[in-house]
Image (cartoon, rainbow, N blue to C red; front, side, top):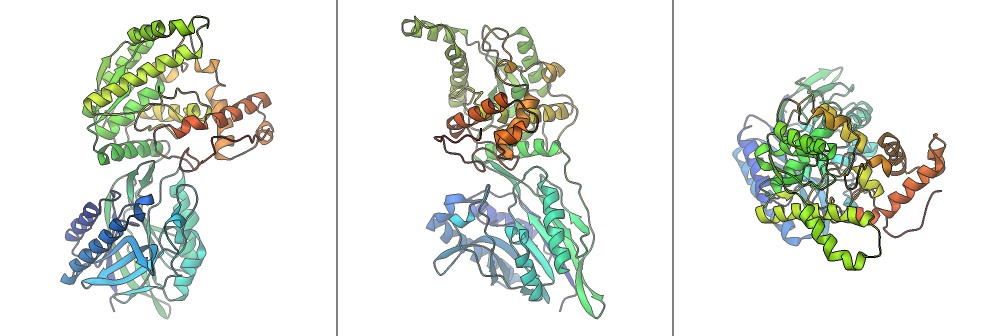
Length: 555
């Protein structure tokens, strides 16, 4: 019976569906950690998480089983055992599980018991729950292997403790949400450890996957709730933890030697890092050479350009100014200043020739109509078409720059400024955009590739937002001031509160009713919007799924 164990926690990025690359990452970590007894990898590491309907392909399941057998063969050399997550088939049903690979074989498999089916998760669509798991005996230690959601409910850990588990090792694919890191440790992991008297090692993956991003921040907590180790967030890390069997009273317990505790990234840098990492992985994993975006001189496009530079480096970011007759010299100067600060290429393509061409083309059928929103939207669509032409011709992905406040109320032009392949600001309200912009202008993110100094002229942070689609236009002409709008939207979208409840907080009824109406009728636009990173609990698309056609109102 061993009195000491070296357990290595491999906090890695994954590429969904690239089984060969994910398996190779296992081999690389093992080759560099031959002193370890056990190396642990994140939830479904072999396939990548979440695989969504890809998991229904028989060829993927067969290949996963083959790769798992090949990884098991590695352990025949007597070196480190491996704990690898994947999909498993039992009696014709799919299970989310982990396999202990030891001695050249699959020594044990444990299935996930609690299947999340809310928010970004729909695991009941794909998997059947396993039975309540039993501990696994490894070198004299009884390991409890709850998987992600299993520790968010007390039953699995209590069951494992009753059967003699001495160490919990929990593998996870836990997406980032604002303040979720605190909830994971204080609200969940420490409670399970204290409740059972058993230390818990929590391993999370890191990296972006379409609209969700994983922040890592893996940790180990003791049976008294002490935080023994915490890995950095937003980057890959391989953490070697040393466990010793110590005498306690008449028995023995396993304790982890205290190690580095990396403080979680503070707000709002955490939001900014989520945007950067999500965009970086989306562009790189989809093999785009870089990105192109319209730089208007406003705050949304300025911070999007900064996020892109921090994600990809300035050499892979192309900014384009698309002025019209309504574009102010101030906006031209601010866009140029922003591009210069970021070190990116900036081209200027005036849209007036196309605007005049459309005006002439449509004149016969528009003859008896006064100019209105139609002409404003034409300008936006001309810009969107121009940027898509650059993307098609030269290859960079077009970034969209609209924020959640605008998308909530439909203050965006479909097939115009909504054009693009990805939107870093999709789940960021306008007040959040201001907060991260002010922060980025005085600080640099820990994972950023951009400049140390300011990334936009100070005037961009202070001038009133404007689409500049008509003379002297301001966003406040059409919408409440953003602090008021965002507060109402937080109630309507994030909290699902009724008009009466929001009015009771002191807001004007007519304003709240109007915002609720705009929120509902803009659903068709959001269905056609590009993906963007999830930041809160109720992002559009993965979390908040409303019908386009419905008549219900809370007023």
